[in-house]
Image (cartoon, rainbow, N blue to C red; front, top):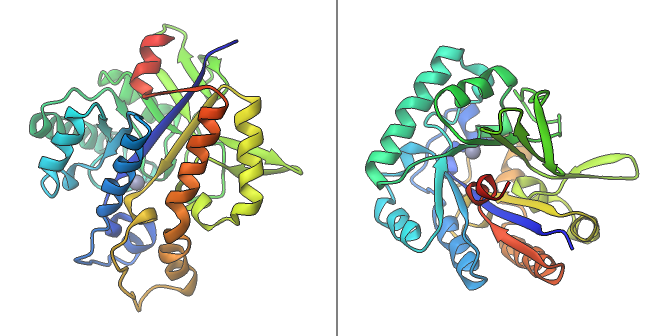
Length: 282
Ligand SMILES: [Zn+2]
């Protein structure tokens, strides 16, 4: 039997880094960072080592906590500093942000960062090349779902696929990991988590995810602390109704869905690894 791999990740950012709040420049005392602790508790319950893509301004807020999570085997990687879509940055701005935020996190937490995930899964081949030049080992920003805003395209033209959705460069020194989509009646569904799984009706998504897990050997999950927070999300008057719905719907039941996905993966004999582990296995 071929080995199967599941990677559990979280983008460590605050409530105000949500795209709809950034659009209106809205601020709040509520961080929703308790969602990170709830996620890690679930990971620890199943002995899963999570990959944390950290936004550098969050580090001073929860530095001790992050250090504890590192000691328990969870892995710190980079989510940048500004949380702007890299597609809205020039190549030079992007390069500068990557260098500075990587150095800051490595210095503050005493870790070596190997991987990056772009805000909004928004990256293209040119920016991918910059990551490689800066010494990153992998990127995890590919998402073949084009409905989101300001998203670039990663073609993986010079990569070979070693798991469905995971790619290795021709020189074998750089990896690209995509989030998972599945097609159902000709429609593409993102089934790797985030706001999509929180808002979508679970009775439809659950069988799609379970079928995917049974038929494949690679699964990636991600969410944001906001998606499972127990803090009270303020009522932002400026926001449109949909954005307010996006910020609050499905939060209470989400962690149970994540647990059901974990149980399905266990039943289907998946190994839980970090992306960094996969760069050593393949
Ligand atoms: Zn993000």
